[in-house]
Each structure stands twice: as C-alpha cells, then as structure tokens.
Image (tube, rainbow, N blue to C red; front, side):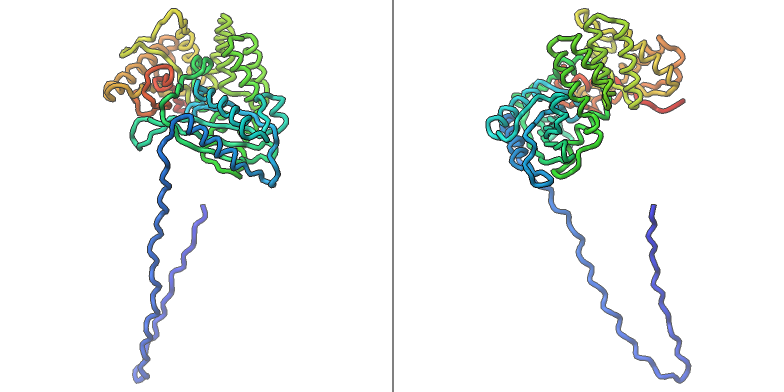
Length: 410
C-alpha cells in the first residue's frame, strides 16, 4: 500500500525585546470558502418493463443500430450467436432459444449487412462478430420477488478483440417460459464454472469499446463444440452427443462443467452405468475444485425423503456414494447447505432446508463414516436463490439445491 505523507505546517513566533517598536499585527489571510460537497448525479430513471416481444426488439434494435468498430470500418459480415443464457445460472431455457430465433429473423429482415451463420467451429475460426446475451429474472423492488426479466445483448468482434455494441431492455413476465431445455434440466450438478462466468461478464457490466474477456476468448472454440453437443442431446442423438462432449473436453478451454455433465448424462442415457459413474466422479471433482458443488436432490414435498420416481430412475445412491468418496479423498471439511424456494412461510422453509441438509449429511456418513467429523449441515431457507421466481417446478429447481461448500483442509 502507498501511504501519503502529510506535512504539518510549522508556525514560527517572534518575541519582542523590551523597548522594541511594536509590530503591527497583520490581518489573517482570508480563508478559502469551502465548496459545498458534490452531490451524486441522480440515477437515471429506467422505463417500466415492456411486454417480452417489445423488450427483445428494443434491445436488439438498440444493439444493431449502435455498432461501432474500433477502426471505423464496417463490421465483418459473418455473425454467429453463442446461445443466450440465464445471467444467474447459465442455463438455456425455452425462452432463450426463442429469443435467438427472433433475433435471427430480425437480422435477416432489417440488418442484411450481417450474414447469420451457425455457431460452429468452422465459423468461429473466421473471427466473426459473436452475439452473446443474458436473460435474467430481476426484482423491480430491492427486497421484492423477481417479477421482471432483464435482457442484455452484446456484440463481440473476435478480430479486434473488442465489444462493439450493447443492447439492453427489461421485460414483463407474461408469455415467458423459463423452463430449462432438456440438457440443463437433466444436469444433476451446478457450480460457478469460469467459462460461464466469463460469458456473463462479457455481456453484463461492460460497455462498447471494452476488451473481450480473455477467459471468454480462450473458450469460444470449445463452446461451439458444446453447443453442437447440447443440440444433439436435445434431439436424443446420444452417441453423437457423447463424442462431441468428449471432443469439447479435449480442446483448449474445454474443461467445463457442461462437458463433464454432458459425458455423464449421455452415458446414463446409453445405459452405460460404469462410464456414467466415472463421469459423475469427474463432475464432483470439478465442483469441489471450484469450492462449491450444488446438487439437484429432489425431495418429496414437505419431507426430507428423496423422491423415488421409478420413471426418473435418478441414481441417488451412486451420487451420494461418489460424493462421500471424493470428500474422503480430498481430506477437506465441507459445509452442507440446504436451500428452498420462496414458496411458503420462511420459518418453515428454513427448518425444512436444515433438515434436508442434515439428511444428506447422514447419508454421506453411511457411505464413508470417516467423513463424519469433517461435515457440518445448515439450512438457509430461501435467502440465497439463484432463480428466485418461486414457481416450485423445473424452472427454479436450483433454488431447492443442496450445496457442498469447501471449508479448506481439516
């Protein structure tokens, strides 16, 4: 830290000897008048949220009409869209997919200087302009429910490494289906993946002219493989999807949660139990390495009993056994944190989330008794939502997660 040095003024007083002529006192120099403290400029008043279709068009038109290349030249003609995501969780939803289709239609109708191409490795290699975007539940009041959505769009020019335009709007909730698409709905684990964080930061909290996040640029090629893998999973082409996930994982920047979750899910769909178990162990390793592993355990309503739907065939025992083994292997202490959605009275949610965390702790100790002294269980109710819509269904499943937070070596 650099410390400023302050010099204290030195005052010298002269003493008069007897009989000396008196010295006329000098008037004190005028003191500067203190300026009134500067007042912060009032925050701009945002317009109220618009209906979804209008909000999206407002943000997209704002984005494409303000494109400004760093060297003043025309932007590259090739435009690709890195799939839009939720700005809190990184999921793709039915609505984010529909947003992409609407943006493509708008560009082809009104911004014909751009040639929209698939988000593929071949097209990414051409250093095109990449559109990224987030669609995030927000609260219109500080402590209120998440009762609107924020649309954030950005254009990233891979050739210059700059953000060349931004678009923003707020949407009402009517007509929005924020249900995760199949791959994200099926994914058992969530964590703050650096790749997803880099994507979100490239859109949110930036302005035109800012450099593209290096973390995003380093991973954009693997993101194209992952996009193809997710699309193949959606189409139930599981063998093809598995190979694409493996390819993504092997590329620079491809060590991402989406790849690990995808390899687990596709092996599970192909009824390959042993490879699925190996893949899930790597999912757990990835989450614990990021110091937070959130698992979507599905409990019966109002209970700490795991939901055993035969049609779902969720291998909870394998999950718990693997997590217990990995905790034991790492010799670390963990806090097991139960979460709930905002539905119902908070005191009940708080108690229920704690009971569920304790239940998971007990199950882990059954599989690995040695970890018992290294685990603590707590519940936080609905105080830390990731989605916050209170829908109590697939849309906010992550709000009912159980988290494993690293407390360091014991």
